[in-house]
Image (cartoon, rainbow, N blue to C red; front, side, top):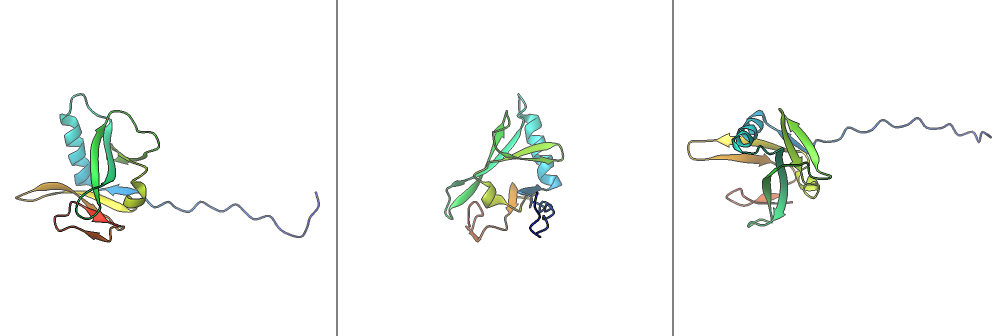
Length: 126
């Protein structure tokens, strides 16, 4: 093999990948509580987005009995959260929390990709 004076490059270390979603302890505990009440028990919860609401997109959450193909899987304190591949670009870097007040209890998403949301907080745009 001839040497042309060019040294081979060392392989690059893979860049750390930003988490699609982080799940708070409260949110994981609430999902676990909801799953425990179901019979038969689902495998986990699937998170996605769909076009609706007054601001464009809204979050969807559904129980799943089998791992959806190509979904991102997040293990949050023993609870499996599956993220629809079509939703990844909208959710990248988001945080899911569960908030309980005297008048409401709900899952709340802190989404760095959201450029705006409606007054009620049900939908967002990017």
